[in-house]
Image (cartoon, rainbow over all chains, first blue to last red; front, side, top):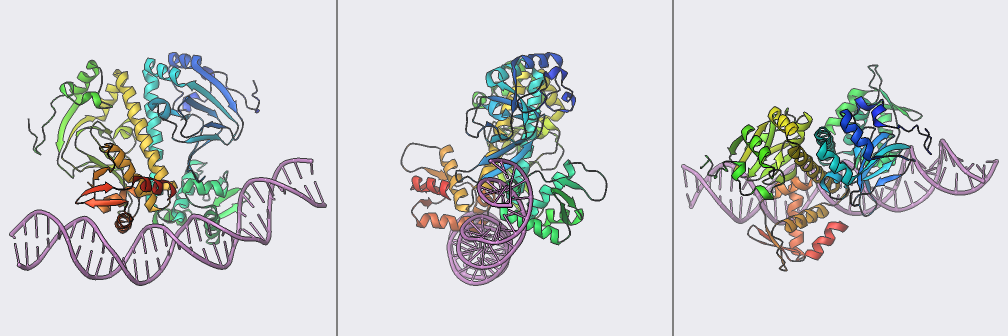
Length: 240
Length: 240
DNA sequence: GACAGCCTGTGATTGGCATCACAACTACTT
DNA sequence: AAGTAGTTGTGATGCCAATCACAGGCTGTC
């Protein structure tokens, strides 16, 4: 089955092949069947907004395919990206559980497939399936952890250089991480977006990259980035 | 019963009078009894450290009396206070659920009474009592919410003045909030600690206070703080 | 009352980075 | 091939706030 955006739709969680490797999805069959009956499988194009910070929680979104940008933004338009969510993550979870407004905005940056569940249905589901409830607690812990890291990065790292170095190291350890000498990673974000991830300005990011290249720490080949001197990068990440 | 630190110890959760008004504690009798059998009621003096960021999770701490400072700190000693926890809050929760290290440090700033539960016991307890598990999810959502606010404050508010104004408004709406014209609040923290809450330096906080006084927005009477012009403060909190 | 140890107030100096302002470089459209 | 929109590179300028340094308060203790 093909969605309007050219994605293969995963028809059912029961037959989903990725299930085992995903935090939330690996539930007992009974729970999965119950989940199946309340979920709405949906497809979104790139750039769709799942929910906006401040809105009352409508429900949760289980991300099956594609990436979603999670951000908060100020009244003057300045934006901060908290993280890029990957498949398996449940979005809007804490708002659905607590009943408070969504605390951030979720926008797709790829074509995405998503399972939506209405809040009431979801809460009922949780009451009936304690395994799922525990999974939810685990997911929330994970989210909390990420938020704490962000707080640390924003509050305790002084220089923008330090934050950028930290980000690059995190990316390189996540992506690939082949043991060869020179880790490389695809730069899937613009300087503007990177700036929003570390809470600085676009120009500063550009200048920092220029500086890192001049110092032979980094090198670019088109949109792939090669880390030539990981040790130096690492020391930037801790010293500032 | 008197603890070594002059606190009345609450003997049992079953007879605890504050139970109803506390997020986690208001559980069905069966769950409470089970909880009762695995908890250790403990008293701490002011300044005790419950856990340190980076430690492997030993268990959870339900705060019954007193306040606890939750902070993260950098290698150079710079510290950021995330929040001051009040009775009813469960500390170390997300680490216990996820199994990852504590992401912050918890230190008492009053004499405190705490119910400690070992991680294994707690996880078993959660599996058996789905009501409790749901409460845990609620608590985690709350924590996540607070962390998100902190991220917003650190990442999007630029001037230190804005952050301080936000903090003061939050305090005044929490404490008292009597409808009389001039809300007042006890300054229970030093300038240094306030600085650590908004991610700035001690001197800056002092200067900001001096400025707010000069502009007739604030006034101090000993250690109580009177907000003379809440509108002005509010506009500082949004404009910067 | 004198001393020590905290907290608070305030000046002087400095640097990092936001901001403004363009120029150059891609990439897609028609 | 030219035109438009989004991205990147770089200089000039100015300001906020960190940092250093030191001078008072305030509290408790001996």
